[in-house]
Length: 208
Image 1: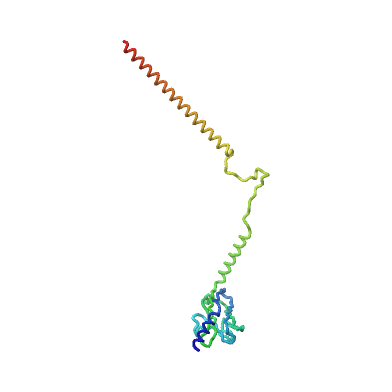
Image 2: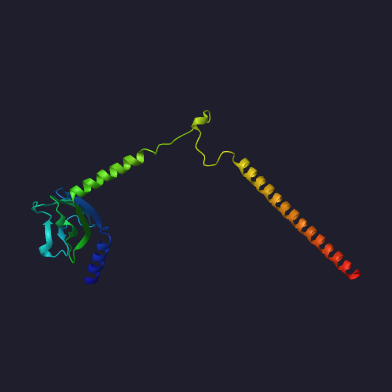
C-alpha cells in the first residue's frame, strides 16, 4: 500500500504543471492561477518558501486574510490574488494541495518592480518606437538641372588631366635623356681631339 501511495504521489507531482513566473508593480495586485490533477475536493493553500505550516498565507475555505485571497474554481484549479504589492513580496511561493500521503506543489516565482521605474521604461520604449517609425530623410538629385547634381571629389578634367600629366612627364624625360647624350658626345669629341693633338706633338718631337 505504501508503494502504491508513493507512485501515486510521484505521478501527481509530475502532472501538477510547470512553474509559474510572473511580475507585478508596487501598489498594484497580481492574480496567480494554479492547477492540479485529481484535486477536485482536496483542500488548496498558498504558502511562501519553504512552505512549512507557519508559512501558509491562505487556505481554501478561509476568508481573505490581509492582502491574500484564494478562490477555488473547481476541477483542481484555484487562483490566489495578492493585493498592494511591495518590493518585499518578491520571492518564491508554492501552490499546494493536501493529499492523503504527501501534498503536491506548484512553484511560483514572483517579481515586484518599482512603478516609477516601469513607467520610465515604458516611456523610453515608446520614444524608441516613435523614432523607428519615421525613416531617415533622403536627398534626391534631379538630372535635369546641373546645379542639383551631387558633388564629386574628382578634379575637373578627370582622366584627361591624368593623361596630360603623363605625356608631359614623358616629354621631359626624353629631353633630359637627349641633353645627356649630347653632352656625352661632346665630351668624347673633346677627348678625341686632345688625343690627336698629343700624337701630333709626339711625332714632331721624334722628327727633331
